[in-house]
Amino acid sequence: MSSRHTFVRPKVVSIEEADWQKGNYDISVFALGFESRSTSFLGKVNAKGAIAYGFDHGHQMEYELNLKLFQSAGVEVLDFLSDNDFEVAFRQTLSALPDDNQKKIFVDVSCFTRFRLAAIVHELFIHAGSRHQDLVVDFAYAVAKFEKPSIFRQPNTVVGPAHRAFAGWSQGNYSSTATILGLGYEQDQAIGVVEYLQSGEVWAFSPISPVDEYKPAVAKANELLLSEIPPSHVIEYDVCSPASVVTTLESVVRGLTDEHSVVLVPFGPKIFVLCTLIVAAIRQDVAVWRVSQGSHIKPHDRSASHIKVGLRLIFRAEN
Image (cartoon, rainbow, N blue to C red; front, side, top):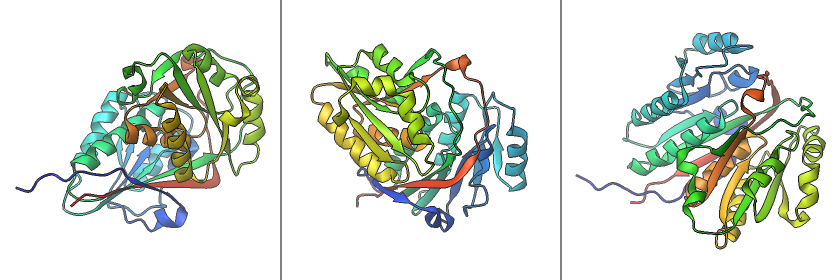
């Protein structure tokens, strides 16, 4: 019986629409939710099998239409899943992939929650480490059309690790915490986390999106925070170049971990959330937190813009 191969860190590459259109995937993965953009990539990828994972809540707005669209396209629907149910189901999906040759997976991250994104990344890294053959994972994200954000500040009621596998910051013995924020356009939400963590050092990643309206909205929503941290600690990142974001994030993290417990708090677009999770999964010594206003959030539909972004992870077996 041959010994199990080990995997080096994945190669991280930004990809474009042409790449996933010719992907020929073994499985494609979607979130069945109430947003219009849940089906943005439906029919845009070629896969031997497809699964849409639903939620045990939020069956409103565009949910019924999305359900019918997935079913009409022959997608297997696993609905009414709690977060724990989802994690088990996704793990089973991966374990069913044969280990006979390279496998390719497509994941639309647009409508997964931060917890479920964290579970996906965690399970993928574990699965890649158990395989004897290469694994290629293509993530895709549909940037939402701009909508004016609420000007009212709501309290953060859910604050903590995005997933138990990303609670690494609490394992250190440092006296100081460094926080790396991804900025969104929720009014003063990021500064609330800084106050909560009593961060000794704060860095902020501010998105530059092809949807021009986002930049001034992000600046306005985070005006107080940005006035309190050094300009050199504010990094603008290109939403459409996620591989570069991973590289820059890891560089900043590397410079902080010698003296601080580091916690990543990714507000903003889901593609940035994904980048933080990948960095944390590679390093295994930093945390990724999710912050939510809980029941204060009113669900609303987010429709997709014409901008779509992709990121590829290539896990290669060492012979």
